[in-house]
Image 1 (spheres, rainbow, N blue to C red):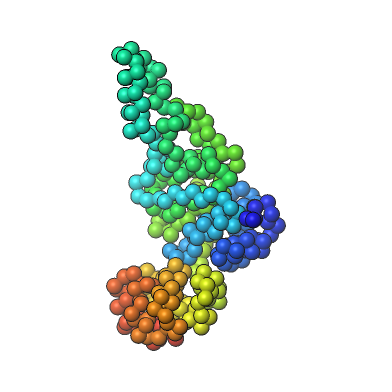
Image 2 (tube, rainbow, N blue to C red):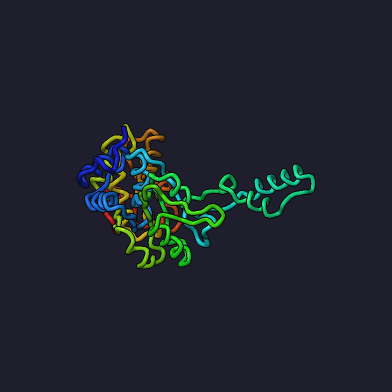
Length: 300
């Protein structure tokens, strides 16, 4: 049976709950998430890509048995994509049905009012979170959205309610557990951050990354997990365009298992480097540094 937020008495309790999902939080992140839960505040997680920010929201939903509602931000996102829209094809079909049934005597005002009921409302992630709460609302990569969308989001976070002119007010019975993430491609405004508890998410330390590999990939050899983690840590210190995150560590370890390898040597690393590095320039830089040096865990 999933735990509930009310069951938690300390950050250590949350660490234990998250660990049941395979997510290993450090003390700082567990404390920030625990306080966000207890205080009913959104949690703003900022950090390099691949540090587990998005995975935290997924783990929270799993740990508490809550639905996860994800809003993926992007350049140009607006309220209709995030909040609600109208099902125009169904509205058109409904209108044609009314016209056919009225035999030319359709009242325009009545027809218009019937077109804007809840059955024609398409709930986007923010509205769904208000309707379906308790839930976990993930606002992913808020730094990709623009200033206008941030201002719109402020009202939702403040009031946990929205008014749709044709329908009326929709208010969350309980505020959703909201996690916002940012890769810091731009600075998010202070007004948004002030409404949240903030935590900078670091890449895991070596021991914790080894444990993550062991938890998330059942049956992985402890020595292989250590080799992958040490190599990935060296790669992160190698001035790459896109340092690998935990997801890439997991992909690399899984690739080695699929190849039936229990040791990460230079030849195998060269053949599987595409699982962990995603830019040609990074692969070339690693070749110049030397894979042997990387596999020893020694950064340049």
